Amino acid sequence: MSNIIEIQNLMKVYDNNYTALDKVNLSIKKGEIIALLGPNGAGKTSLISNVCGISSITSGNVFVEGYNVEKEYRKTRDLIGLVPQELSLEPFEKVWDSVKFSRQLFGKKRNDNYLENLLKKLSLWDKKNQIIKSLSGGMKRRVLIAKALSHEPKILFLDEPTAGVDVELRKDMWSIIKELKNDGVTIILTTHYIEEAEMIADRIAVINNGKILLIDKKDNLISKMSKKTLTIYTKQILKSIPHSLKKFNLRIFKNEKKLEYDYTASGNKTGITTLLSKIKSSGIELIDVQTRQSTLEEIFVEIVNND
Amino acid sequence: MINFEAIKAIYKFEMARTFRTIIQSLISPVLSTILYFIVFGTAIGKNMQLISEIPYGAFIVPGLILLTVSMQSVTNASFGIFFPKFLGTTYELLSAPISYIEIIIGYVGAATTKSFCLGLIILITSFFFVDIKVVYPMLMLLMLFLSCISFSLLGFIIGIWSDNFEQINFVPMLIITPLVFLGGSFYTIDILPKFWQNITFFNPIFYLISGFRFSFFGEGEVSVWISIFSSVIFIVICNIIIWKMFKTGYKIKT
Ligand SMILES: Nc1ncnc2c1ncn2[C@@H]1O[C@H](COP(=O)(O)OP(=O)(O)OP(=O)(O)O)[C@@H](O)[C@H]1O
Ligand SMILES: [Mg+2]
Image 1 (cartoon, rainbow over the protein chains, first blue to last red):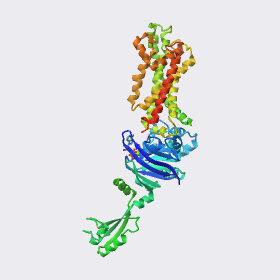
Image 2 (image 1 turned 90 degrees about the vertical axis):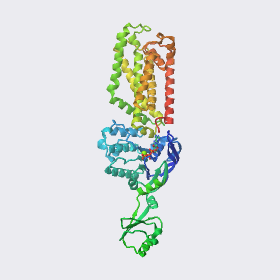
Image 3 (image 1 turned 180 degrees about the vertical axis):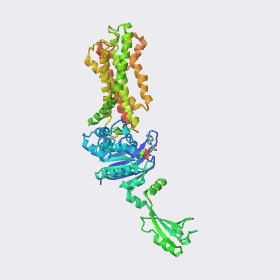
């Protein structure tokens, strides 16, 4: 697979001298869904704005299908659809007019069939003659998506598509996104919801303080980074850890009859067998054991905190 | 290379915005023009000395048209770009495969169209009040057109520059109205003391009014070529400013 977007040493320093992006490098493959994950103010919107032309690049280069986004912006912008974070819409315009405007703005030939299908897919068809002001927040978000897709882009940027959207609508969005992926659209989305990234992304990039801290396939990320925890339920509350078990860094609890042991799932030697046999020989009686894999959320919090 | 569809889209959008408020856009300028005719043309005008043999009521027609057209051009063009900035919908303009050229032609073109039509409507209205004949009709249309473009471009710049509604009202009120009044809309500058006459030569609107008046009566205070030339210069300067603004992203890009 070739890279559809290539970001090289991208720096963004705002007028107030704030560095929002600090030498960001990122390659995005054709057809993948990539989730940008990061806390408020991490630089997610800034990154998108620099690629799409909303924000002027301080230094570095961005290429879209090999074209430079600053010098060959007509070619790159033609390929990109953008759904902004804010619900920025003309309040008194009708949904249909708004979507038609967007298509025309991108210089595309009129195609009412395509737009009709698009609105139907986004459950907006019955609202096409309503003015935008009269729509709910979630519906406005859909209008933004329809506008972004109106010119049949190959790349779609979604800046927090599911912010302020209820569970039902969120699931709808996910299926829309998956459908787009099936049509070959490359999708870059930002989110605060880890489960969202976990649910739909192929790769996840964690960004904080304007730097990409790590980027990897979702599954790799979980297995590589994940810690597993083995919980051992005992018959009695342990007052202290027997000497023979010291090297395992076990956690004991004052009021619970259990022990906890952390290990990494990726290693060949988990140490579980030795631990269990040592426990047995030290005379502690076991009732049950349980293992638990840490979620992306925990990984994420750990990465950001270590930064 | 130019994205003509985009120009059409912006132009149509802007014109649609006007038609939503067509009554307000027309009634208030026409009404205030009629009031000017009643007060200056008929009531006071009778007692005014004839200026170059032209009845005062007729004399003020070009100035009145220019006064309305300048205000409307500036207001229309500045709000046209200010609103998207205010609403955040400029993101779409910036992310579309268009340059500042399409944006200017779309927005300024629409504002120019509106004020040009309004200028003609005021001219037609004036026919009901005063006896007036246009000596050079084609030149009159050209001068009207140049005035509409000039003020629309200026309005567009003000719209980009403004951060809030106060600023956007401030410039037309405090700068353009005085310049139009003092540029000789309602008098010829030879009635002014020498000092003020000299100052008037620095007022760009003076040249527009002079040229516009020439097209009506066949006489102006400066050569009509100077009028045409200076408005072309003004248009070029505005274009350079706008080009610079978009190039540096001034108050448009973050
Ligand atoms: N126009 C601007 N001028 C100055 N600083 C800005 C500007 N826009 C953003 N910033 C700053 O840049 C940093 C990154 O902002 P950005 O909007 O990219 O974050 P984000 O990751 O999208 O956050 P969120 O999750 O809240 O949307 C923030 O500290 C923000 O305050
Ligand atoms: Mg953001």
